[in-house]
Length: 314
Image (cartoon, rainbow, N blue to C red; front, side, top):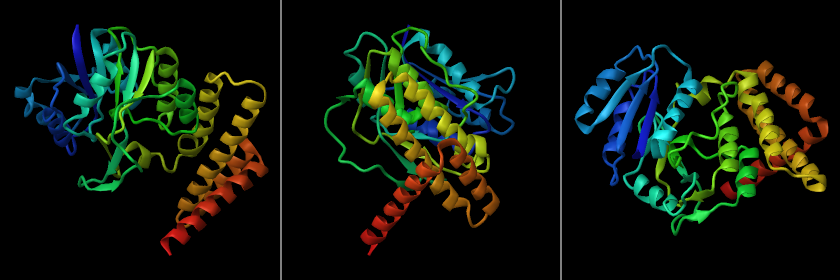
């Protein structure tokens, strides 16, 4: 059985894939196996991989285009063949010490476990456009399950390329839901977290997520169901996994309604100028799900945030 397997699901990734593969080649601890899982690309993806063949990287083409989520789930099929599994998206990067820091953090646990690190956002050119607030550094830390689940319910998900799954040579206990292309990873990691032994955060920025015009997030901006309504579905699904009852359950529901309202209000602001009808659709659909009271509370929260930012800027 292999120790560390990295899989890169890709479709038409020739523009950013070279940098992604180069980030793998620069690792201080190298994977035993690297598979570029091509979802029937029509560009020069295979030629990019050929240039890295001397590094031991493998190109594997699906018989047909499975779709993005199904291609990710195919990567999970290798869980039982390796001790650690890493899915690296074809436009994202990992820093040289990524495996060096994450694998030892997971090593003490014999069963399945999740290890992850924070990430920063880069643009099409590789320039860092956003970094999470620290402080960062120090020893890996154990994340309690309920805290982890609460974060997933509030859509504060961990990023797929920033995660190493310790599979312990066993099948993956969860799959990514194909009907939730934008936020299904929150459900996936919540279900994985419920089944695994430990959840570990390595407090060091070791991954870079690339935002660009062809990314899934930007493709879904004008899809009300995917960009907006699926968020509420995920919030409810993950919240149910937490097992809260009584007052705790009621308070969580109210909190999630306010968070969903605030997120939708931000999207209304984003779309109001160029797509006013769509903005109204977001508002109406959100209010229909959670009611006018929580919509108003969410709107107030966004207003207070904007006012606070204005004061800091002054």
